[in-house]
Length: 249
Image 1 (cartoon, rainbow, N blue to C red):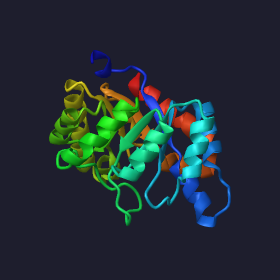
Image 2: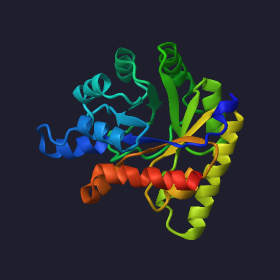
Image 3: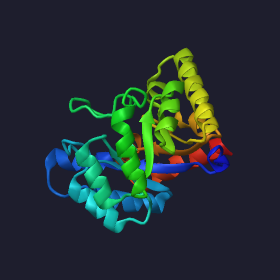
């Protein structure tokens, strides 16, 4: 487990969901999430993340099939802990499956998974994913009891929810949330968990998170897709990659 405690090169997973959101706003085939994934690979991404939601509001089953069949980077499937999504994951066998909370009315994932309170429902899903050779991660709040629960569940990876940090306004609020993340990253690493983080990260706030030595991967999507409107997707990803590398160095 020692290899999970520190990594010198921080991986960047690019979430392409909102390319599909733009496409679905009008219908048709453009813009194509697969094309975005291929461009992300060229620009320096280490993996691709896609969230197949129950209501299929952005990524669709056809998108998932296209990604599985066409990209060389590892695919991280974000999914709710439901029988339907478990079946889809077992059918397609992505590199990784990140279990996230999901509510139909939310615009985006609004909080971390309650790993502590949902142990009995999560345990069989995690076990089946692991048996299929799929790397399992849990998207959780940076709280010690949730990390402890993830370890008890046998999930090898957790992704810390950076939303409260990213959305903090005052310097004092930012400092409090950053300290929460730092404590959580250290606690999770001490448990032998591979530590990831993501949600709401931008060029301006990624530095302190990327500098945490316990983190192995950041997953960033909405900001990069929005920035691509102004600069192009490749340059946006390259700039984020450079900011992460500078902070880790």
